Length: 377
Image (cartoon, rainbow, N blue to C red; front, top):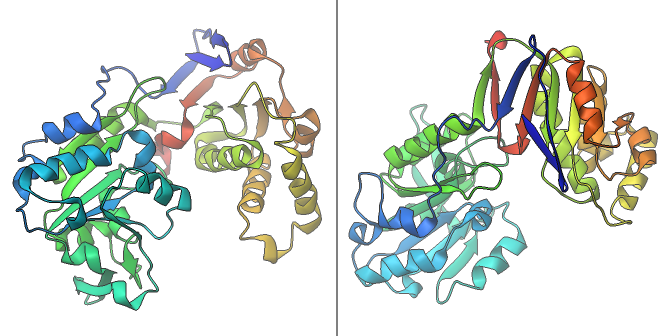
């Protein structure tokens, strides 16, 4: 079990009676597959260019998080061009919560493609897909429903920040979503869309892409579970969150989300150790320090409940009722004190904490991990 912090690394030495579990699980070999390779070798399904005709209108429902994981619009357009489909016949639809940065990033390589962000309030984008088994009508993005060829580009669900093909189209592309309807049921009503799915690689490794229909998605899901999913028989005494880097309150919000997810895995009175960044801009935490003081004055004010940072602070406060929190990060010491957390100064202190804990769970990139507590079944 090795932890990296800046240019330093620490291999935790386990005692004979200790139980150690590290995610991702690397028992099986990881083989990265880039986007172009997946398109060239789909899973037991024809290549994309054989699934269309020259007159087809192609719609790409795109999870914007895949843009940073190797999604290549030129590779996709190149495959469609083999069939005779021009860029003007291709529309890319992003979910309603897609950022402006995602839109701008796509426009740089879009050529003659149309790029839209789904607007559930636009009556012109609304069309009935069909009825559910419960008798409810499903209203979905018009372009997605009326496409001759629908290509869905997504990840596999780990956390609320990641999408499956089903959740990307519903509720991601929905108008007036029916809460009782599952994304899987909507995906079935859409027929057989072409699925391109990405699975994150372990730290330092490129991701793996799959192409095809639901069988390809299941292959991606199985690969994700092999590496990023584990089952616990009993609560652990210490969870180490080896987090990726953000700045200031963005980093804290990421920590708080991870803590809220792992809290059910921890014994009462247990410990959570956060390993963050070893360097920071001097002013990156200043706004956050002001927000902490505001939160302390406004903790019972319901008007702040929708602010992301305030929600994170509430999660943090709830965690402190159950466990102790230790932080190895460049966060200023006074902010650490305001958060009622224990700031540690180096990797050597982690070994001391680990030696005093009977069972330890280390989660590298915790936002990508999935752990099931079997005692809660």
